[in-house]
Amino acid sequence: MKTHSKIIALLKTEGALTAKVLASKLGLTTMGIRQHMLTLEESGEVSFKDEKAPRGRPTRFWSLTEKTHSHFADRHNELTVQLIDSVIAVFGDDGLDKLISNREEETMSAYRLALADRYGVSEKLTTLAKLRNDEGYMATVTEEENIFWLLENHCPICAAATKCQSFCRSELHLFQSLLDDVATVTREEHIVSGARRCAYKVMPK
Image 1 (cartoon, rainbow, N blue to C red):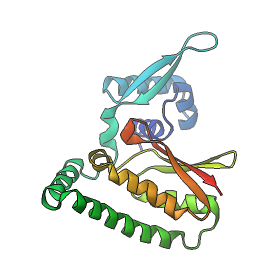
Image 2: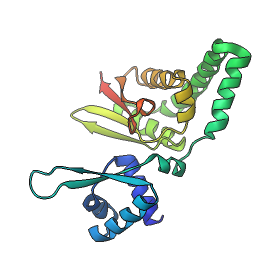
Image 3: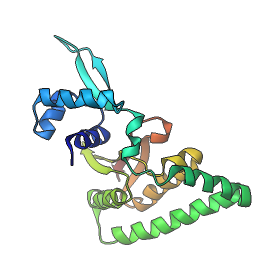
Image 4: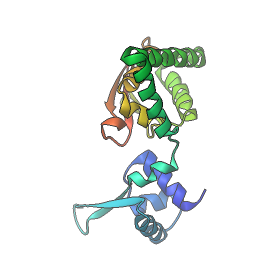
């Protein structure tokens, strides 16, 4: 993978980072990273924000622009939106709700099968994150003081979710149902609402 692609992937999964942190993670010099960042800035793929430091010069944080969306799976956004419009036109809102419910049921069955021999919050979440990764969500799991987080750094169905919020409600309900016996799930960050990622807070029961 080229250095530019590695930088974009890191900024996508971890959010704004300094050149020093990027250099450390990629095993490069800070000067070398800065040269890459200037090239990416010129191409419009990254931007920066200088934040005041306790002392000395401000710290520069780099983040991705919307231009980098094309680097990640999009599930043919335009066609997806057209199909949603067509379903509503032909079958009405009820028809779209039935379609989403059917999708949720099929996904639920597949996920339940994959989680059947997984026990405990950590084990279930790790498997769930792998399933979501396979679908393009760039999912990770973290734990802080016995609270788990399922983090999805990309939404391959963003166009559909933006067009119809029921897709997002369906996915939250899916996670809540899958983990109902071991945890409660709430969504704390939401890509469709303008956040960098979708963050699901998972509280063990």
